[in-house]
Length: 342
Image 1 (tube, rainbow, N blue to C red):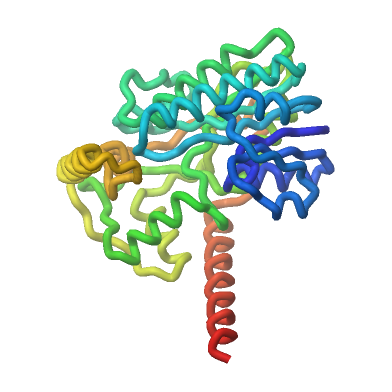
Image 2 (cartoon, helix red, strand yellow):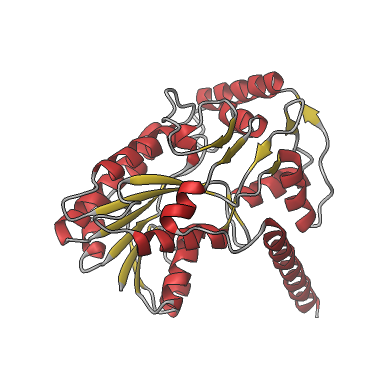
């Protein structure tokens, strides 16, 4: 099998690449940066942007499956930039698949496409897309997902996965931001009481993509459908946050602020960043405040039935692996420091 992974150098993309290599697949990666470590492992790497149709078309030629993982993520930034990567980039992937006769496309979506600022407790995929989006990320991912699912048929089978809060060793987005804020004393729990939140350990998220590719075909039950992916172990938000902090050797956080206060603080921060024309993300946004104060966990029955999805790594095991990862990092840092002093 020859597979293309867009965003193959990213956190989830690299995990998918690793599993494909273990299976003996020929793997290509298209990413904006250079990743020599992938080349060293035998991956055919291409540097380019999914917003460039020629770059995508070149890398998709001759492939049996495309895993479209590349995306612009975040709760802040120019709408045009999100649209260019998430919508135009996805259209380019679809066009490349059609042009080169690629039979399967597995698209990485997000549960944010259905988040409307209210609690989501055990909902399944019948939940409609949100009618209003607070971020360009959610809006453009929803539009891209619609296009992917609508493209199913006529020689191309498509499926969309919505992994929720992907975390684990090597995470370069969620966990680093949490730890940076914790070390600066800027973490707060939002809302008067805890709500249940599910997440997805990186190995489980990556394996779900391969399971989807295995099952996908013109007449498959999963063709043209979207699926929630998570641990299936929802936890109170404070428990999840403090478990990650503990794995990193940091103290727990118990301080809380009401959602209205956090929402207003996010609105003020957004206004200031907009006036200053800053493209980096504010310390808090209205979207993040709502996310931290609402429940979001899902019925995974469809993924279990149609994809054969069964999380192999539990929260307990994932947290143990995360702690080991941080301990190894600390030991390596200490060893480097001793070497510099010698």
